[in-house]
Amino acid sequence: MNDRTPQAADATAADREAQLLQLLQTLGIDHEYCAHPAVFTVDQARETVPLRSGVSAKNLFVQAKKGHRLFLLVVPYEKSVDLRALGEELGVGKLALASPETLLDVLGLTPGAVSVFGLMNDTQRRTTLVIDHSLWNAPRLQAHPLINTATIAFDHEALERFLTHTGHDPIVMNLPNRKT
Image (cartoon, rainbow, N blue to C red; front, side, top):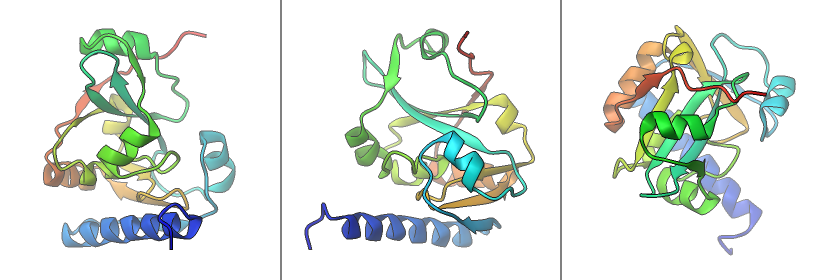
């Protein structure tokens, strides 16, 4: 079977999810699991994903245009990040969405399945995690388990344990909101 077939992509996504769930079990991270139809946008997630305990987040994988630094932004659904202002605050200049190829290469993910859990695949620690303070301070969060057909809810302590395991120290800040 050709690696570019939908069946191969699904198997790879299912394998990634299984690896994450095994890691969470190994780390002793309790979580609530909810399968649902595939979602690719915040609006689809709001309509499709059953409400669970925990704050929902959206994730943006971006890179600096100069220097090619990579950032995973984790923000509340309702926030529209001002990438220009954030790039200035981080001292890296202009930020833009990273390509799907870079996303796959660094986090092992495809668009629509991006979440903080992708950091488990960033063994070279090329990505800087930037998380909005409102999410960091939330007692419980929700995220895709490396696949966009499921969502898991987990405690803040579990997030810290996961990040310690991956070696990613987050930057916690109030990410600038784009002015409308």
